[in-house]
Image (cartoon, rainbow, N blue to C red):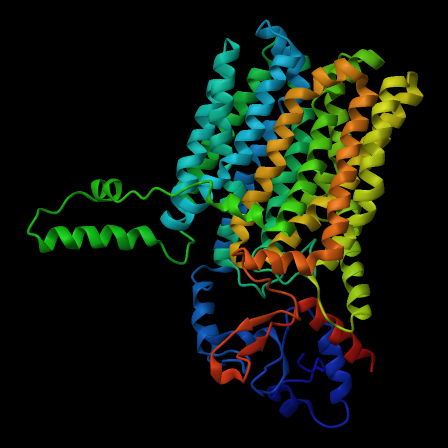
Length: 595
């Protein structure tokens, strides 16, 4: 591994002067926004300030080669103000899917009464929606790479608005299922395409949005996680409370329909905003080359020029949406995806029947009050979305950071991707499964104010455990498959939401068969199985990754021990050491400052 001792750049040395240079270097080492680079070819190592990093000011930093300069221009197409607008539009779009999912839950009794059916049957519509938002990103993601990001937004958001309108107008169960499916198709696009949009406009070293994952070395996940948390995580927290208020205080059983009209309006607003202000962010659009080749061929053959819309239609390319599922053949991806799926399954096993169980055990029928129970479980989501509340800051940020630093010291600076998973052990082995287990038996056997108080506390603890697990799981998947990050996230979400859909459909019959305590015990058992898979990945992760590479997976990008084939001129073995992870660099910087 390259020497990790960091020194100042030559531009700073010339201006720093004599004996105070060491102290000045230590002061600068604590400032964010600087780059530390180690060059295996023998160039000088340095710490570069932000003002020295901009090639547009005429000063090309010494760590940049021609390829780096050319790449940086791709990210300078938009001003900072425009980038913030793009980020805001992505966050608003990301809000739709989880909000419309959670808004349904406290209104299930009202919906079943309005459509003359049972809550168990209405749960099927919840399952259909969850499965749709899990499966459709497998189709949206590859087409965004072919046609660009903007067409996907302009296509999916109106579909969501139309689906919401259809749900609001549904007068029977069949119509409700069909329109919920359409709603899910439209809302699911941003779950996969959003990460690509953020990755298009921010370079990997731009870490201003890294509010939760403070020391990751990913290309997209650092930005995407923080962008999506406000949208994806605030939605489940506040939607049930709003839906509960509408269900309780709107006359008749029309409150849930009003909620869907609100979602329709949000979809229309988001569609208009994206049409007016969302630019194409993709670095290249392959379909343009296909269209131009077709038009050129027609011109060479003397055929009349056809309208562009016809050229686009005739140039349509069929992409297999199931192709990314091949990533599940990689043992480590399969293990972490199953763990994530089991963890999210427990959450839906708790939330879907919550209205019915609270009503039957504690006699609470007010939908507005019932909605606050979902808010109790979702406080941690909301906190993560805002980025400044206790659970997100301490459990998903500092805990992961501390875990990485501890193991980096133990390994003398060698970064192993599986070390990140150690931050999930407390949540996956103790907090979440124990909360789910206790919650089932407290609601089943408890009564009165004491039982109700414990229910609220356990819902909150369940939210803590969920946050401790899922964020690190997503991050690990991108760590080991950086070049296929969109696909691996889509596959991970597919596994999560497929099992969650099954839980939504079968949880009430299971509760009726074995009781709430038994059903939650079963869910907690699945969570512990997922915990075992994480432990196995931590123990045998390197072997699992190497086995995955033999089966055609992408080489791990982030393990210092990994090697990447290069030209023969690199040496007798033709190998080059993988890049040093930023967390390793940060640790070296701290050690250097202590000296």
